[in-house]
Every structure is written in C-alpha cells, then in structure tokens.
Length: 319
Image 1 (tube, rainbow, N blue to C red):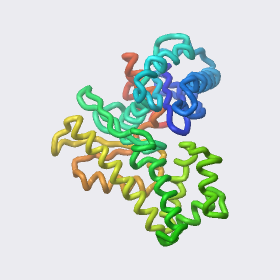
Image 2 (spheres, helix red, strand yellow):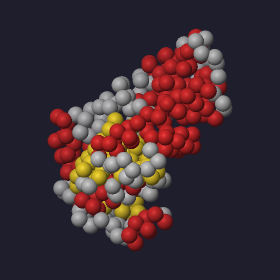
Image 3 (cartoon, one colour):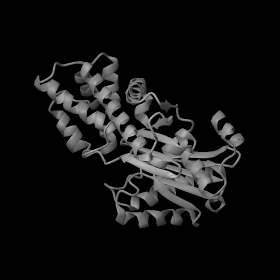
C-alpha cells in the first residue's frame, strides 16, 4: 500500500492506493498551510487524515509501505525543512516516507511521472517540470508579491476592479453586483470590513472570490475577461521559462499538463491553451491523467522502487 498526501492552500487530500491500482481509502481535511498558524498545524492535519484513511481501509499505519507528503510551502523556509521532514514519523510510526513541495504531486499526477511540465493554478500558482532527471520550479512566490495567474491573484484583481467600479473609475459591469452579492454587503465600503476585519485577509477566503470573477466573465463583463486573459498569459509565461531552464530545445515536443481549481473554468483552460500555442506550436498540452493526490501515491510507489505497472495505472484511470 502507498499513501499519497497532497497539501494545498485550501485543503489537504489523502489517498491510500495498492499496487494493483485500487484506491482503498480517501480523505480530505483542512489545509496544512502553516505559515499563519504555526508549524504544529502540519502534524495535527496529517494525523487526522492518516487516521481517517487507515480506519476506512481497516489497516494500520505500519502496513503502509511508502508514503509521500506533498506539503504547501515546503522548501520555502529553509529553517523549517528539518522539522517538516520529521513530523510524518510521529504520525506513521516509521520512516518509510519522504516529503516535498506539493508541486510534485501535480506533476506526477497530471503527466504520470514522465518528462514534461505541470502548471498549477489553485490558491497559488507555480510550475514544476522534469527532464532527464533534472527538476525545475518557477513561481510559487506567495500571494503578497507573486503567484501570478492564481485564484488569489485573480480574486485580488477582481476586488480592485470592484473598488474602481464603485468609485466611478471604471464603468460598472456584472462584476460589481456579483462581488456585492457574493460578499453580502449593501454598502460598498463594507467590503473593507468583511475582507480585512471579518475574514482577516484569510488567503483561502479571498481566493474563493476568483469564482466570482469567472461568473462575471460569463455574464459578459469585459474587465473580468481581461483579468482572466492576463492570468492565462502569466501561466503560459512561467511554463515557457520552465521549458527553457530544463533545456528543452526549440522544436522539441514538450508535454504540458495542469492542475489546480482555476482550470475547472473553461475560460482558463481555453485561454491558457491559446496563450501556450502563441508561445510555441511544440507544446503538447494534455488533460491531467490523475489527480495530484493520486500523483503523490504514484510518487511514493516510485520512491519505494515499485512504480505501478501499466495494468495498475489502467485500473486507476478507469476509476
């Protein structure tokens, strides 16, 4: 059995997979993004999720051959890496695991572990790719001064557009009413109270407003469409940078896939493909084969020296 854990900005997903490709148990818990609540949060979240999948499958943590924990923010605070690497031992009771950034889960799941690039647009954004054993990351600098093309980035631009529409600096389109309805305010200035005081700038709550920007675009809001188009261009840019840094040559086919909630929006999927093709006709954009959490389990199997067979992968794909 292989355990995959995919941590994100809004939730943490767990899956227990056997070597025949069968999913034995799944669970979803709160986010283990610890920078606002402290590193102790990670162990509590992991203990909750591992406990859930083990109880559901009727197994003990000791029965898990290998686990991979994809943790948000891993590697972004060097002083924390040693602590993060040690935490799963307290949960599993053994050392048959490894930790890494959650970007690895998206890459392993979307492309099935082959050379290529995965772009993530969830609460945050980044790319991760591998070629000939070399891995490279671009983006993922956080919501304060990075994460271009992410849900948070889209949401904050939507909020900024709302303020401009409220003031009269922009014509009021569907985005104006959509944000007022979603946030639940009657007076425009109450938006400050809700986002800053009530939500206290909570990352996941703000990022969720990206859905409102997508909704407004579907209602014909030109400003919302511009925000989403710019997001797609930003995502294509970080893919292009990753391609160059990995050493893919001009004219060499580059498998690309995607993960993260923003790609649930058709506008983002189409817009990203258009932006990518405009960069190079040699990008081979593929729908993700597996979810990031399944990718974490596949990566665990690979780390154990027992990658799943093609037959097992077919079983997993058929689920």
